[in-house]
Image (cartoon, rainbow, N blue to C red; front, top):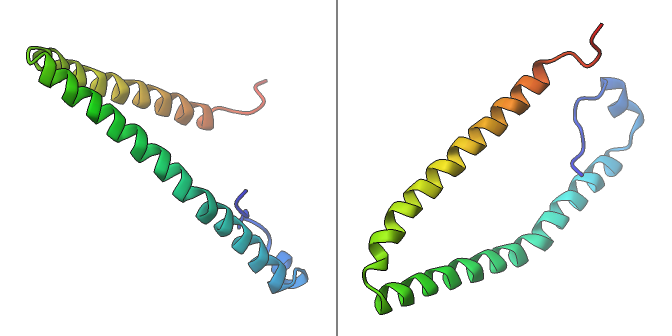
Length: 100
């Protein structure tokens, strides 16, 4: 959990510098510790998918005519869904917490 810097200035007067640095260093350590494993899984899955697509296109060359348009359609669907979610979150942050 990242440390929230939106605190009053008095917080920095009463909190030792070592405690603040310790909080940041533990956050950085947790990211540095898990990032290589996540990158390894991502690369393994990406190359597996690429290998399957290459073998399918080698065995059935006409499937490439189907995979190319489906890839474009999938990409645009993902972009539209992402934009809808971002728009919803933006509207949610602008709404009142308590409505009278």
